[in-house]
Image (cartoon, rainbow, N blue to C red; front, top):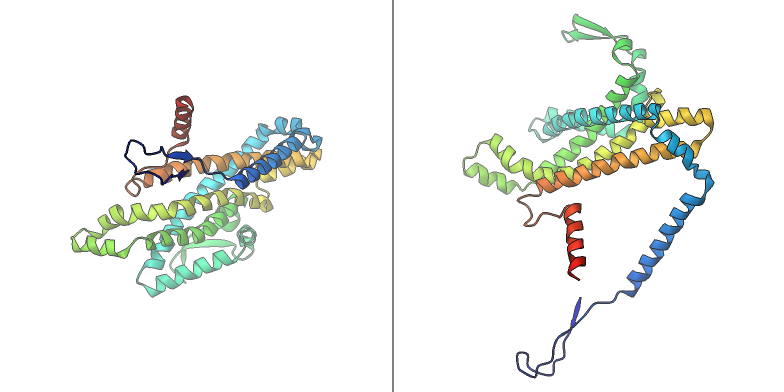
Length: 310
């Protein structure tokens, strides 16, 4: 909005002119908006009219039992990989932030190695661990073992996939957690120590709430990336979502509609994770902002209220 004043008379007097409020005009903004809407309409028109999308086949397989079972496997890999990966990431971040040079070096080396090697290579390596070690032993280091387990029985395709995703995720989660902790101003910890607040309470009441605000956006982004990365485990012939649609279109040749089945499911899951991220970030924003960002429902109510008021 812009205000246009007529500086002819003194405000407050009987003959002072009224102030005219003129909305700011943004012609190029309208041009770009119309162009974007036209492009979006063309894309939707192509989705509806192009028979190549084969929507009847898409509808027929979207809720098909084998696809839903594959979707369940994808969710299992994502949730287990995220929980175990972030637990490992917290431990690695603590090692990087410790005063021990040995722990710092070990943590740095782990992160460097697992961020350098592609995920698909890691998965194939863990799936073929039996070629290097026939058994794994639990016992005295460099001495006799008390428990011996065959790697063929211990690490199957699903175990190799989960192990690879977890170790890969831990390397990235470690840096996310470390950056969140480092973002907290050290002066606050010094002030808390001067007040005699114990260190566990300093971490729980001062460091953690502030660090979470920095950790959450990156962690949610990494979780969504992990969800999509589960499609890589198709190389281990695990029946996750992408592998299953490959099996189906290998039989019937309907590549595009089956790929759309997997795509739409990934979009739905990503949308749910984004909604969860919004509410978790909103919760941790309490105390940092005077007014919390409105929820979609609150925005809708406010918009309807303004429309009714007009």
